[in-house]
Image (cartoon, rainbow, N blue to C red; front, side, top):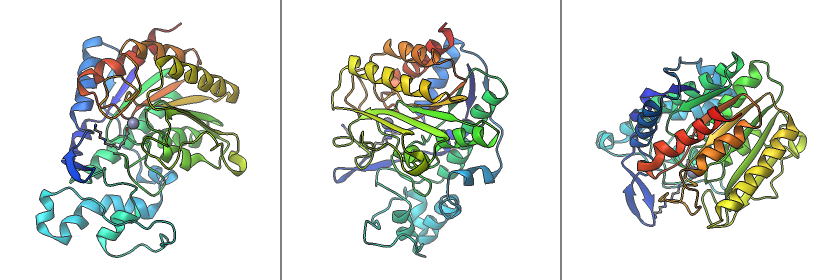
Length: 347
Ligand code: SP5
Ligand code: ZN
């Protein structure tokens, strides 16, 4: 396993997120990646390298220019509202739902925050842009290494990416690392790429980015959005649109689903991936399916993650793992590295 490590991840350091009427400490914190890096070192799972930066144009293959401009300037604009904002995270407080217009970008920065976001749980901080941009570099590097012949690569980065759409952030995500990885391989000559999203939460951003396309198959196993974030996308009847019809597969599981049910869904996912015959696979690797996760209600145990990696390896595809969610910080290293080791040692 060749790991690309985004050492600038810690530049994104949110203080709080809104939860039920109050500000609570962020679940998505730098210690998450620190734990995985430490465990990778202990287990000696192969080289850990620093990614090269990719041209800014690469981001525009997935995200809109006006969203990227917003995100790049967000912190400066936030502090320009009031110098005292330098000590506070930026949060939206107003959103252009349904009959309100989102085609005109307001001048007011607070209004921009709402235009480009989907929740109040995702703080923008002074280093958010640099962490997210270098994270995107990290994911694209992991994808490119597959094109150069690597069998398995890992993008160790945060903030995560799979909730971020072409022009919005949310769910702790700003740039869609998995989508950028898949798009990069297509731009480099791959004809078909698949994305398997095994984070506890539905990858609404990734789904929406590829929803009308047949060159990317998106398959996701996640908690039923009726009861879990992101709530407004991720149902089984979302199968794609236009040319993309049949190229989106959602496998939602009920609140508290058993580990057996989860692995049965993984089997279904793998069959669909195999039928698609992609040239490469991107895995949105969230381990918030862990029994001890503070946000989630599935029951996977640490040892189960070895089987997850093993099953993915049996697909026989060049695979880039992209780190997403997982908030049981103490066990995070073991759970993530178990997936990678299961992949490496299979066959
Ligand atoms: C990448 C990723 O896993 N994003 C998840 C975003 C979930 N945001 C909603 C979190 C709600 C916080 N709930 C606190 C429950 C405390 N028991
Ligand atoms: Zn998640």
